[in-house]
Length: 122
Ligand SMILES: [Cu+2]
Image 1 (cartoon, rainbow, N blue to C red):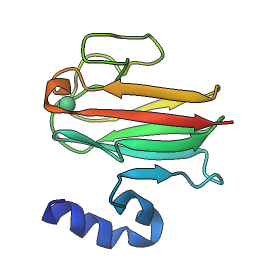
Image 2: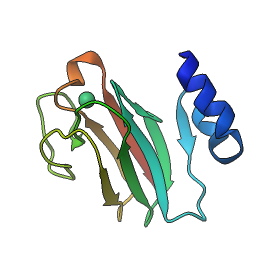
Image 3: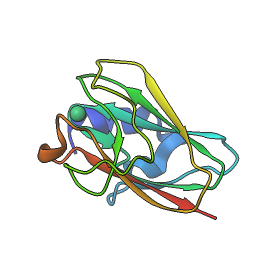
Image 4: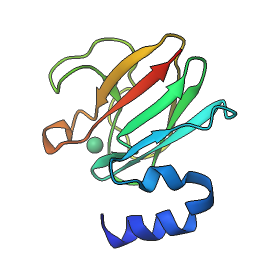
């Protein structure tokens, strides 16, 4: 974990302390309709996010040129969701209506390990 991330964790400790856990898996606050994932160079944070059916994940670009593409590996799009072509900023929202595990990746940086998953619980 780098210094910047540690600093971010300290600042946001009250709100998103689980995001700083060692296994990088966060269980969402089920009272929130929208749960955030940061998109930076070159990772999703948290990489593994656990939510409930009906919640929306909002990916927010913090730097670099990225996209969000659902699929089991770097060369496969499963069609569940896609933010579009890689861009340098903005947000992408996806509401999850069914339970399951949804892997995704960033096309330009998948080979570098820029992948994530959303675990949707009933
Ligand atoms: Cu990327």
